[in-house]
Amino acid sequence: LNDEGAMSTCKDTRATSIDTAIESLVEAKGEAHVIAGGIALGILMNEKLVQPSWLIDISGVEAFRGIELLEDGTLRIGAMETHHAIQRSEIVSESIPMLTEMAAEIACGRIKNRGTIGGNICLADPQGDPPIAALALGATLRAVGTNGTRDIPVADFFTDLYTTSLSEDELLQDIRFPPLSANCGAAYGKFAARNAMDYTSTVSVAVRAVVDPDEGTITEVGLGSGGVGFIPVCPKMTEAVFIGEKPDSETFASARQALFEELEPIEDHLYSADYKRHVVSVILRRTMERAYARALPQTGASSP
Image (cartoon, rainbow, N blue to C red; front, top):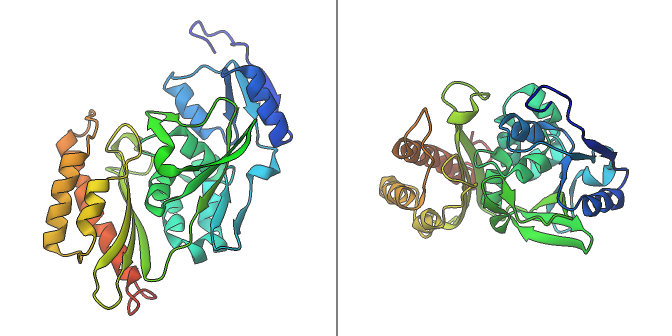
Protein backbone atom coordinates (compact mmCIF):
# COMPACT_ATOMS: atom_id res chain seq x y z
CA LEU A 1 0.00 0.00 0.00
CA ASN A 2 1.13 3.56 -0.65
CA ASP A 3 0.65 6.51 1.71
CA GLU A 4 -2.92 6.99 0.52
CA GLY A 5 -3.78 3.36 1.15
CA ALA A 6 -3.90 2.38 -2.53
CA MET A 7 -2.18 -0.75 -3.77
CA SER A 8 1.24 0.10 -5.19
CA THR A 9 2.27 -1.49 -8.47
CA CYS A 10 5.10 -3.95 -8.07
CA LYS A 11 6.61 -6.21 -10.68
CA ASP A 12 7.04 -9.80 -9.50
CA THR A 13 9.57 -12.25 -10.95
CA ARG A 14 9.75 -15.85 -9.76
CA ALA A 15 13.28 -17.08 -10.48
CA THR A 16 13.74 -20.75 -11.37
CA SER A 17 17.55 -20.73 -11.37
CA ILE A 18 20.50 -18.61 -10.34
CA ASP A 19 20.87 -17.44 -13.94
CA THR A 20 17.28 -16.20 -14.21
CA ALA A 21 17.59 -14.43 -10.86
CA ILE A 22 20.76 -12.63 -11.99
CA GLU A 23 19.21 -11.75 -15.35
CA SER A 24 16.33 -10.09 -13.51
CA LEU A 25 18.74 -8.19 -11.25
CA VAL A 26 20.60 -6.85 -14.27
CA GLU A 27 17.37 -5.83 -15.98
CA ALA A 28 16.13 -4.10 -12.84
CA LYS A 29 19.26 -1.89 -12.64
CA GLY A 30 19.28 -1.68 -8.87
CA GLU A 31 15.53 -1.26 -8.44
CA ALA A 32 14.73 -4.87 -7.46
CA HIS A 33 14.47 -6.43 -4.01
CA VAL A 34 15.12 -10.13 -3.48
CA ILE A 35 12.67 -12.15 -1.40
CA ALA A 36 12.99 -15.68 -0.02
CA GLY A 37 11.62 -15.98 3.51
CA GLY A 38 10.44 -12.37 3.46
CA ILE A 39 11.46 -11.60 7.06
CA ALA A 40 14.32 -9.20 6.28
CA LEU A 41 12.37 -7.43 3.55
CA GLY A 42 9.39 -7.14 5.85
CA ILE A 43 11.55 -5.38 8.45
CA LEU A 44 12.78 -2.86 5.88
CA MET A 45 9.24 -2.22 4.66
CA ASN A 46 7.88 -1.83 8.20
CA GLU A 47 10.60 0.72 8.93
CA LYS A 48 9.69 2.51 5.67
CA LEU A 49 13.23 2.13 4.38
CA VAL A 50 12.13 0.53 1.11
CA GLN A 51 9.02 0.43 -1.05
CA PRO A 52 9.68 -2.35 -3.58
CA SER A 53 8.82 -1.73 -7.22
CA TRP A 54 10.19 -5.09 -8.33
CA LEU A 55 10.39 -8.31 -6.31
CA ILE A 56 12.56 -11.23 -7.35
CA ASP A 57 11.42 -14.40 -5.60
CA ILE A 58 14.31 -16.89 -5.24
CA SER A 59 12.49 -19.31 -2.92
CA GLY A 60 12.28 -21.94 -5.67
CA VAL A 61 16.00 -21.95 -6.52
CA GLU A 62 17.43 -25.11 -4.95
CA ALA A 63 21.02 -23.99 -5.57
CA PHE A 64 20.64 -21.57 -2.65
CA ARG A 65 19.85 -24.40 -0.23
CA GLY A 66 21.89 -27.11 1.44
CA ILE A 67 23.91 -27.78 4.60
CA GLU A 68 27.03 -29.85 4.05
CA LEU A 69 30.62 -30.44 5.07
CA LEU A 70 33.09 -29.96 2.24
CA GLU A 71 36.17 -32.14 1.82
CA ASP A 72 38.39 -29.72 3.75
CA GLY A 73 35.99 -29.63 6.70
CA THR A 74 34.40 -26.32 5.75
CA LEU A 75 30.74 -26.07 6.72
CA ARG A 76 28.70 -24.74 3.80
CA ILE A 77 25.22 -23.38 4.52
CA GLY A 78 23.07 -22.26 1.62
CA ALA A 79 21.83 -18.69 1.89
CA MET A 80 18.21 -19.82 1.80
CA GLU A 81 18.43 -22.29 4.70
CA THR A 82 16.12 -21.28 7.54
CA HIS A 83 17.17 -20.60 11.11
CA HIS A 84 15.04 -23.57 12.17
CA ALA A 85 16.87 -25.88 9.75
CA ILE A 86 20.23 -24.70 11.10
CA GLN A 87 19.14 -25.19 14.70
CA ARG A 88 18.00 -28.76 13.99
CA SER A 89 20.86 -29.80 11.69
CA GLU A 90 23.08 -32.60 13.04
CA ILE A 91 25.82 -31.55 10.62
CA VAL A 92 25.86 -28.09 12.17
CA SER A 93 25.69 -29.27 15.79
CA GLU A 94 28.50 -31.78 15.27
CA SER A 95 30.85 -29.44 13.38
CA ILE A 96 30.19 -25.96 14.83
CA PRO A 97 27.74 -26.24 17.76
CA MET A 98 27.98 -22.51 18.40
CA LEU A 99 25.79 -22.01 15.30
CA THR A 100 23.13 -24.23 16.86
CA GLU A 101 23.36 -22.09 19.97
CA MET A 102 23.08 -18.93 17.89
CA ALA A 103 20.05 -20.13 15.91
CA ALA A 104 18.24 -20.95 19.15
CA GLU A 105 18.47 -17.27 20.17
CA ILE A 106 16.70 -15.93 17.09
CA ALA A 107 13.31 -14.38 17.81
CA CYS A 108 10.33 -16.77 17.77
CA GLY A 109 9.28 -19.96 16.01
CA ARG A 110 7.47 -18.14 13.21
CA ILE A 111 10.56 -16.16 12.27
CA LYS A 112 12.83 -19.20 12.61
CA ASN A 113 10.59 -21.18 10.27
CA ARG A 114 10.50 -18.49 7.56
CA GLY A 115 13.63 -16.43 8.03
CA THR A 116 16.80 -17.43 6.20
CA ILE A 117 20.42 -17.06 7.19
CA GLY A 118 21.21 -15.34 3.89
CA GLY A 119 18.39 -12.86 4.23
CA ASN A 120 19.46 -12.02 7.77
CA ILE A 121 23.08 -11.48 6.76
CA CYS A 122 22.15 -9.40 3.70
CA LEU A 123 19.89 -7.22 5.83
CA ALA A 124 23.12 -6.12 7.55
CA ASP A 125 21.30 -5.14 10.69
CA PRO A 126 23.70 -4.40 13.58
CA GLN A 127 21.58 -6.57 15.89
CA GLY A 128 21.35 -9.61 13.63
CA ASP A 129 22.56 -12.90 15.13
CA PRO A 130 24.08 -14.73 12.11
CA PRO A 131 26.40 -11.81 11.20
CA ILE A 132 27.84 -11.80 14.73
CA ALA A 133 28.54 -15.53 14.68
CA ALA A 134 30.00 -15.28 11.17
CA LEU A 135 32.43 -12.57 12.29
CA ALA A 136 33.71 -14.60 15.25
CA LEU A 137 34.10 -17.72 13.13
CA GLY A 138 35.84 -15.96 10.24
CA ALA A 139 33.27 -17.01 7.66
CA THR A 140 33.47 -16.40 3.94
CA LEU A 141 30.41 -15.26 1.99
CA ARG A 142 30.16 -16.57 -1.55
CA ALA A 143 28.39 -14.20 -3.93
CA VAL A 144 27.25 -15.05 -7.44
CA GLY A 145 26.65 -12.55 -10.25
CA THR A 146 27.23 -11.80 -13.90
CA ASN A 147 30.99 -12.33 -13.48
CA GLY A 148 30.58 -15.68 -11.76
CA THR A 149 31.29 -16.27 -8.07
CA ARG A 150 33.49 -14.32 -5.68
CA ASP A 151 34.33 -14.96 -2.05
CA ILE A 152 33.97 -12.07 0.40
CA PRO A 153 35.51 -12.24 3.89
CA VAL A 154 32.72 -11.48 6.35
CA ALA A 155 34.80 -8.67 7.87
CA ASP A 156 34.53 -6.84 4.50
CA PHE A 157 30.85 -7.54 3.90
CA PHE A 158 29.10 -5.00 6.13
CA THR A 159 29.79 -1.46 4.96
CA ASP A 160 27.09 0.68 6.62
CA LEU A 161 23.69 0.45 8.28
CA TYR A 162 21.63 -2.01 6.20
CA THR A 163 24.34 -1.91 3.53
CA THR A 164 26.67 -4.64 2.22
CA SER A 165 29.43 -4.95 -0.35
CA LEU A 166 27.24 -6.95 -2.76
CA SER A 167 26.99 -5.43 -6.22
CA GLU A 168 23.63 -4.71 -7.86
CA ASP A 169 23.95 -7.85 -9.99
CA GLU A 170 25.02 -10.18 -7.15
CA LEU A 171 23.23 -12.54 -4.81
CA LEU A 172 24.53 -14.27 -1.70
CA GLN A 173 24.79 -17.95 -2.62
CA ASP A 174 26.11 -19.51 0.59
CA ILE A 175 28.07 -18.98 3.77
CA ARG A 176 31.25 -20.98 4.41
CA PHE A 177 32.53 -21.52 7.93
CA PRO A 178 36.10 -22.86 8.33
CA PRO A 179 36.45 -25.90 10.59
CA LEU A 180 37.23 -25.30 14.23
CA SER A 181 40.86 -26.09 14.95
CA ALA A 182 42.12 -28.33 17.73
CA ASN A 183 41.67 -26.95 21.24
CA CYS A 184 39.14 -24.44 19.97
CA GLY A 185 35.94 -23.51 21.77
CA ALA A 186 33.13 -21.26 20.57
CA ALA A 187 30.06 -19.83 22.28
CA TYR A 188 27.24 -17.36 21.68
CA GLY A 189 25.70 -15.03 24.25
CA LYS A 190 22.79 -12.61 24.00
CA PHE A 191 21.06 -10.08 26.22
CA ALA A 192 17.40 -9.25 25.65
CA ALA A 193 15.69 -7.10 28.24
CA ARG A 194 12.26 -8.74 28.05
CA ASN A 195 12.02 -11.41 25.38
CA ALA A 196 13.39 -12.45 22.01
CA MET A 197 10.88 -10.27 20.15
CA ASP A 198 11.88 -7.12 22.07
CA TYR A 199 14.14 -6.27 19.17
CA THR A 200 15.45 -2.88 20.23
CA SER A 201 17.06 -4.17 23.43
CA THR A 202 19.36 -6.92 22.15
CA VAL A 203 23.12 -6.98 22.66
CA SER A 204 25.04 -10.08 21.60
CA VAL A 205 28.55 -11.51 21.56
CA ALA A 206 30.05 -14.45 19.69
CA VAL A 207 33.42 -15.89 20.74
CA ARG A 208 35.87 -18.30 19.16
CA ALA A 209 38.95 -19.08 21.27
CA VAL A 210 41.92 -21.36 20.64
CA VAL A 211 43.78 -22.39 23.80
CA ASP A 212 47.29 -23.73 24.33
CA PRO A 213 46.54 -27.06 26.09
CA ASP A 214 49.79 -26.94 28.08
CA GLU A 215 49.89 -23.28 29.14
CA GLY A 216 46.16 -22.64 29.23
CA THR A 217 46.66 -19.32 27.44
CA ILE A 218 44.60 -18.11 24.51
CA THR A 219 46.54 -18.23 21.27
CA GLU A 220 43.85 -17.11 18.85
CA VAL A 221 40.51 -15.38 19.28
CA GLY A 222 37.62 -14.22 17.10
CA LEU A 223 34.91 -11.90 18.38
CA GLY A 224 31.67 -10.56 16.99
CA SER A 225 29.42 -8.02 18.71
CA GLY A 226 25.86 -6.99 17.91
CA GLY A 227 23.76 -4.01 18.97
CA VAL A 228 26.79 -1.82 19.67
CA GLY A 229 27.31 0.09 16.42
CA PHE A 230 25.95 0.90 12.97
CA ILE A 231 27.09 -2.47 11.64
CA PRO A 232 27.89 -5.87 13.17
CA VAL A 233 31.22 -5.25 14.89
CA CYS A 234 34.46 -7.23 15.13
CA PRO A 235 36.29 -5.51 18.03
CA LYS A 236 39.95 -5.96 17.07
CA MET A 237 41.41 -4.07 20.03
CA THR A 238 39.52 -6.32 22.40
CA GLU A 239 40.59 -9.46 20.54
CA ALA A 240 44.23 -8.45 20.99
CA VAL A 241 43.81 -8.17 24.77
CA PHE A 242 43.18 -11.91 25.10
CA ILE A 243 46.15 -13.15 23.04
CA GLY A 244 48.71 -14.87 25.27
CA GLU A 245 46.51 -14.50 28.33
CA LYS A 246 44.15 -16.57 30.44
CA PRO A 247 40.59 -15.29 30.89
CA ASP A 248 41.04 -14.05 34.46
CA SER A 249 39.84 -10.92 36.22
CA GLU A 250 42.80 -8.83 35.09
CA THR A 251 42.34 -9.82 31.45
CA PHE A 252 38.63 -9.10 31.54
CA ALA A 253 39.28 -5.69 33.11
CA SER A 254 41.58 -4.87 30.19
CA ALA A 255 39.02 -6.22 27.73
CA ARG A 256 36.32 -4.05 29.27
CA GLN A 257 38.50 -0.97 28.85
CA ALA A 258 39.20 -1.86 25.23
CA LEU A 259 35.50 -2.33 24.52
CA PHE A 260 34.67 1.07 26.03
CA GLU A 261 37.31 2.68 23.82
CA GLU A 262 36.49 1.06 20.48
CA LEU A 263 32.73 0.50 20.51
CA GLU A 264 30.30 3.28 19.59
CA PRO A 265 26.83 2.03 20.54
CA ILE A 266 23.77 3.94 19.36
CA GLU A 267 21.69 5.36 22.19
CA ASP A 268 17.98 4.57 22.02
CA HIS A 269 14.82 5.07 24.07
CA LEU A 270 15.82 2.19 26.37
CA TYR A 271 19.56 2.42 26.96
CA SER A 272 22.44 4.85 26.90
CA ALA A 273 25.62 4.11 24.96
CA ASP A 274 27.56 3.54 28.20
CA TYR A 275 24.95 1.07 29.45
CA LYS A 276 25.26 -0.91 26.21
CA ARG A 277 29.04 -0.93 26.62
CA HIS A 278 28.59 -2.28 30.14
CA VAL A 279 26.17 -4.97 28.96
CA VAL A 280 28.41 -6.13 26.13
CA SER A 281 31.39 -6.39 28.53
CA VAL A 282 29.35 -8.60 30.87
CA ILE A 283 28.12 -10.79 28.01
CA LEU A 284 31.67 -11.02 26.64
CA ARG A 285 32.98 -12.30 29.98
CA ARG A 286 30.28 -14.96 30.31
CA THR A 287 30.59 -16.06 26.69
CA MET A 288 34.40 -16.13 26.71
CA GLU A 289 34.38 -18.27 29.86
CA ARG A 290 32.11 -20.80 28.14
CA ALA A 291 34.19 -20.83 24.96
CA TYR A 292 37.41 -21.21 26.99
CA ALA A 293 35.99 -24.15 28.96
CA ARG A 294 34.96 -25.86 25.73
CA ALA A 295 38.49 -25.44 24.34
CA LEU A 296 40.16 -27.21 27.25
CA PRO A 297 40.62 -30.95 26.52
CA GLN A 298 39.74 -32.07 30.05
CA THR A 299 36.42 -30.22 30.17
CA GLY A 300 35.44 -29.70 26.53
CA ALA A 301 33.16 -32.76 26.32
CA SER A 302 31.10 -31.97 29.39
CA SER A 303 31.07 -28.19 29.49
CA PRO A 304 27.70 -26.44 29.17
